[in-house]
Image (cartoon, rainbow, N blue to C red; front, side):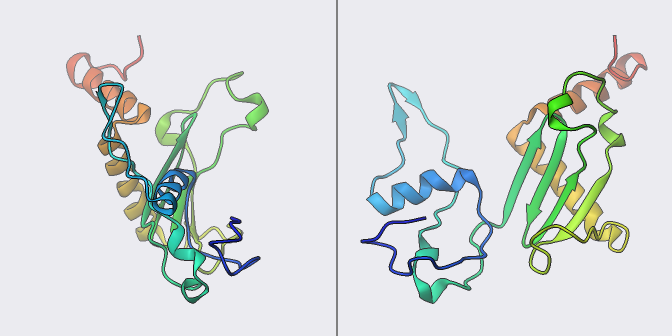
Length: 172
């Protein structure tokens, strides 16, 4: 980020974990504008991001991240960040081939686990060495999916309902 009149540590590097959804809260805090509660008569949901403005002060260069958990999901690929740990699935095919073949069943994706505090580049997959941490993050992923009513959660709920009511796996 660059804002010469506000950010005095030009070129400073920060290691706190943040996500795209943190940009709007940062801009709102920096400008002193409150998040809108109603837009054109429509009540707005609360903004889910957190401000990154605290990182602008050089004294906070090594402060803990204010983002504790972040949910990721795109085209059945999943990820969850929580307090320095990141668990994610491996894409079944390259992005340029997505949608050209069948996706594997939701529960057949390989999960990876990374400690971003020690391995920000996600080079060392710790899933085999730390299966309990992976299970913890997978459970957190499902909790977050349910809380935000993600497309994946809706698919899984539909499959579970079909299995209970007519014995199939949700396939017609």
